[in-house]
Image 1 (tube, rainbow, N blue to C red):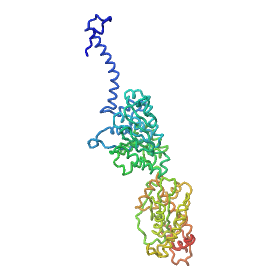
Image 2: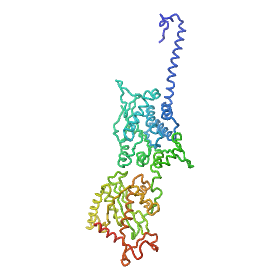
Image 3: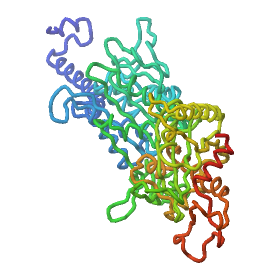
Amino acid sequence: MKIDLSEILKGTPYENVDPSILGEAVRNVSERLKSKVVGANREKNICRKRATGKRGSYLFFCRHYFPHYFSIPFGEQQMELIHLIQSYRSTRNKDGSKNRKPVRSLVALSRGFGKSTILTLCGVLWLLLTGTWKFPILISSTLNQAKEFLRKIQEEIEDNAALSKDFPELLPKKDIKGQNVSWSDFDLVFMGGFRVIAKGWGNAIRGKRHKNFRPDALLMDDPDEEKDVESESTMRRKYRWLERAALKLGTVWGIDAILSYTTIAPNCVGEYVFNSERYKEWIRKKYQALVTDPDGTERSSWPAGAPLDLLQKERDEDPITFAQERQNDPLPEVGQKFKGLIQTWKFERPESFAGWQLALALDLSLGKTERSDFSAIVGLGLSPLGKFYELYSDIQRRRPDQIQKDFIQALQAFPWDIAGIETNGGQEHFLDGFKTRLEDWNELCSLESSELGLTLANKIIVPVIGIENGGDKIRRIEGALQVPIATGQLLLREDSKILREQFEEFPFKKKDGPDATEMAHRLIVERLGSSISFLSTEERSGAILLSQKANPTEKDSVIPEGYIAKSINQLRREQAKRRGF
């Protein structure tokens, strides 16, 4: 529409001014006003484009809008996490095909290296602003911790002027009454049409929706508390919740996921995902604060924030905590009591156990607040040459009735001299129940039941006693077994994979196998050793000479001259009689 200036200026002091001059003046004023508006928005437009445009950079977004968090240069770990978050924006799969499948990642970063800020604050906002996600869920070990993530987001949107000015879509969404739709520490709904909620690990999570959107991303940070990893049953519930509830969210195509953690124990959720074949399709990476180059030189992966001398000092003061929280090593070798000490032997059953002392022990692990609810049956034999050999081990999860069956089977495997069952923590009832079952078994053997194929040869006359374990378990096991294992006086079977692994990981993981081994060792050293008596040479008929010397014919034998030990069978009969069998 063409404006007639002469009509507009009638009755004003400019009525008689040349219209061409007035037109030029209007154009000049318009251009000045336009330049002011463009100048004010120019920086905003450039920053938005660099941060969230088609080729927007997450690194720029962090540095430009959050300088108060990132005042020093990033290190290797931070840059790796930044690049990982950047990769989620891609709309293509690794092979270049369209319609990207859900991306799931696990990253273990060092404590204090800023992973929570990069992921749960800046990362969430950037992926919302780029349109990558519409409805992410922030998850932590507890709901309160997850709420803290949302409070940080609220604070930035309300207090960070540059952020709210350049991205007004981050402001709270209003309803028709002008009130916030939802702006709390557990649920945020934004003007841009996206939503973020907070959940604690194990909380109800199914059925969540935002308009027509289902949750499209899980950001899980520090999923464990110290008290959680002390209970194996608690950790199994946490594993199941991740697999059966959290990762089942999203569309039929699945859901994006990022799990970040710092190692606090070998059985924490992060370590479970890192080691499980179930998650082999995930991107799984671990990072260390102190890096050793191929030439042996140590360096810090974040020189600006964690100098080398500071890290080395931390390592010297508390090597175990440093290994876990800075190096993400779940089993620091400095604390592994049997690492590198274990010696094995290839099991070949001797033709005769004459001269041997054999003991079988059962660690129930029933109703204990341990990391494991495995039961362990371990048998040792002391050879005539004075070495302990692992003869039998059976370590697995099982119910009490199955434990009784397996223990009876173990009692028949070798000619044990004695067997023991741990009775700590009110477990005496198991011993009583087992003795009753053993009596029934022996009665069936006496009847020579053809239906079960039992004969008198299957009768069990091994004395079974209760073992009360007091004091600190770790010190007890270490004190009794470390020297024999280190010196090769106690050898494990080379095919006993589970028992050997438990010794190598001791005391950081399951301790049932080492506990049963220590009890079997104690039965031989204390019970059988104290029950051996000596006979004169006139009583030597049918007896077997015992010696713990490397050469039983040496003159300096510890057995007095003219005496020999009772036979193993005789000892077994006497002990069975004393025990009421």
